[in-house]
Length: 506
Ligand SMILES: [Zn+2]
Image 1 (cartoon, rainbow, N blue to C red):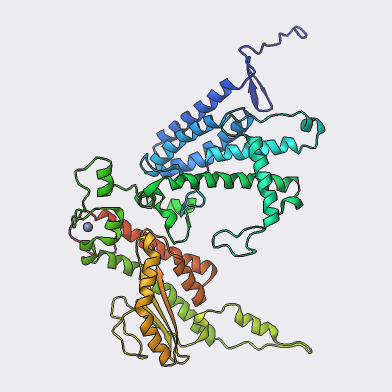
Image 2: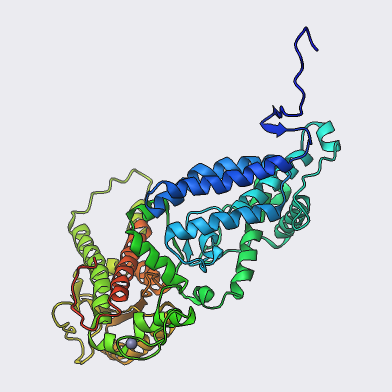
């Protein structure tokens, strides 16, 4: 009793202190089951909203996830429990995205896969949070906190303090060997931060990033065991990252098509047969084995009906449009009267020379570029040498004796490299003949994978022509989109024996 008022007992009256609940057991078991309940009820409530799937996924990522991430940090919860929570979440995310339960969780969270989605893994959030906690306690300004030896408990499967120690030693090692450039990243593109020069805050960030990297490495290790769902690791194409704003623009069925085609979990005849839902794994058009690759890129009947040519031309149209705009731009620029440069006494006109060199691509090397595209009407090869070959696109300057040919292929992603070599060889002789007549030549075989993934050759083409930055990015994106939309249409018509080339799919 305090001043006649009874102090409530902790039994039956849990106390909240610094955001954390304490009950009579003084341990976290009750709270953990409360979190579990929060997750399963939260997901179920979102599911009940009746909104389209992608909205549900958004509500999870921005509404529920931040709310459960905090208590995970606060309570002594094991990694095994968090993994269980994540499985519940994945089950719903798959349903909302319209992918089958067999769809790998790596596809949902990977940041190095060919297709990145904007979701955060709960397990990863948890691990990063716990590691941050370890570092905060260890580096605390308060000596008592440092000496208290508070242990961040995370269960037997994964230890936060061990993960931090490992991350630290990896970071120290990186100081010695230097930063290794990743992927297409050039030297000096990423700001490297050295462990031994970093302050406490920077070190915390470095360790957290390192832990995220370790998680991604674990995902990649699992990927090796995946078989057909991991086939994309062999693609010679650029990564695509799907942002929320992309998701809003996507029609639901097309997003489904993209996700399911990348991980080969579409109901193709072979998959249906594998799932024991149909008698035969045959293509309804030609009777060959109906794999996704067959339907999207190698069915003889579909080919003879012009389905693939139609898709090829849709992508080519996008490419031609970009290049035609660039060609005109070059001419307009060149027509502008050159500004008079006033040079101060003692200075030279160096500035002028520099500004002319900033954007130097093939297109800047002539003023009279002409463009022929093999669309709608038959391409006529310029009168340099006689030939029967018809590349998809020819760009030439008679005045400067320069000629560029572009040949586009829309193959199965894994075959981009092969297509590139084949097409290059096809035009080798023609190019040599042009050079024999004193022309400077370029030959660009480019590929856009049929599921909408432009190969590196596309980026190289644009750079060489002098199309850079945002312009290049949008151009590659547009070509990818055209391929993906057309393939989606080809997919939908897989059982229809007649084919009418329409542009309805766009
Ligand atoms: Zn077929």
